[in-house]
Image (cartoon, rainbow, N blue to C red; front, side, top):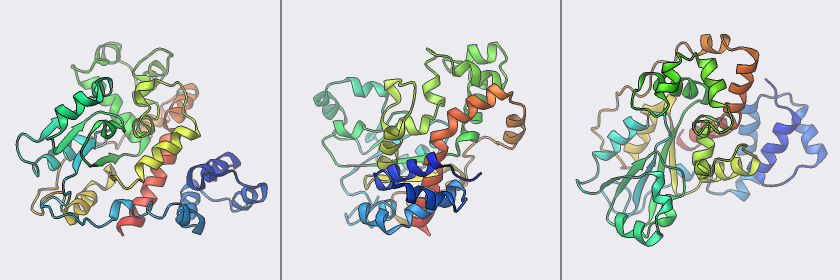
Length: 312
């Protein structure tokens, strides 16, 4: 589907941090291009490269510190976005750090005094957990964030399936007990006051923007801009679930994981029925699905383009 004028204005805000002139909007609109092409054109534009000299290559910058892990004295912080092969990534990364230096982290760390967090985590080399971006602000040591992103639609379906089959999940009884279909699950999750909404409603953007715990009903361009800025910053390295083995190859080349590691892992449940599930949605359910994936789709398209620009 070709982009509309709102997509174009949003792209100027995201990539160039300015409002476009009417003739600039018209220029892109007349190209009748898909969103992925629009993203690529902005990433390759001279203005973007001048304003963001490190963005396209931030995940590919050379490591200058002397360390067997290629990290120097930096702590590696895995922001585990649910249903993006994060468990597999944690398992791969953990083997490269000595016993006693691993630390699971949770959202509750944001509620603790900074000094307490610094004392608890000062000697930890590898941190991991379902936590939003920003925990590094409470650390005294240097850091490197790492995460994986996944195509928003399959991720959302995978999350639904996970809740249905996982008895320990806090929403399992509601979802499995009522034998919810995917569409019914979307309608249930969209209800105001449902705390699970903020995990599935553009959850990847929320986590990377550091907004997940604020429970804001709506995401806007400023939140998306923050998420993209965090994703492309020099203290972040990210991969894509759909290209997981390639990402592990990148990590091996950077010395972040061992060369002889086994990268053949079951990184995500089969999403072969994704298209069928979409066809079964009612009009109102499809509207919720589109809203739940809208901002994540924009960020994922950008992330995919930027990833292959940096690593190919």
